[in-house]
Amino acid sequence: MASLLTYDITSKHAEFKKEMFELGYLDQISGNTCKIIYFPNTSLYHPNNTSERARIDAELICTRLRINLERCVATVWDNWSAICGEPFK
View 1 (cartoon, rainbow, N blue to C red):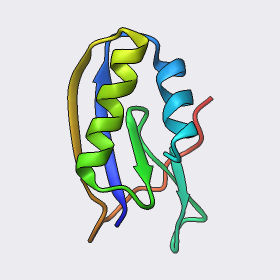
View 2: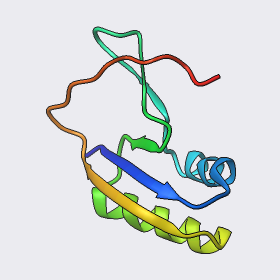
View 3: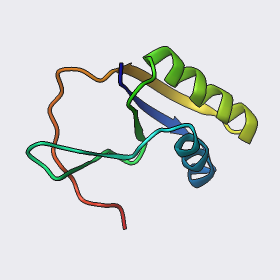
């Protein structure tokens, strides 16, 4: 089951994403209509985690980095629609 995580953190954005990438999270995926779907800056996708696991991973990394996880929503990636977006510069 795939999941989508969206979050707000107070600092250390690059460090947070690096650790999430090491756990298999992605900030872009292949699409059908779009060659690549780029997620918004504070959203990550995992192809195999439950939404609960995604939230727990975010909490654990924030604790390790000593940053505040201000907001967090994780959900099952199902029945979605997207605007392809552009790579971050």
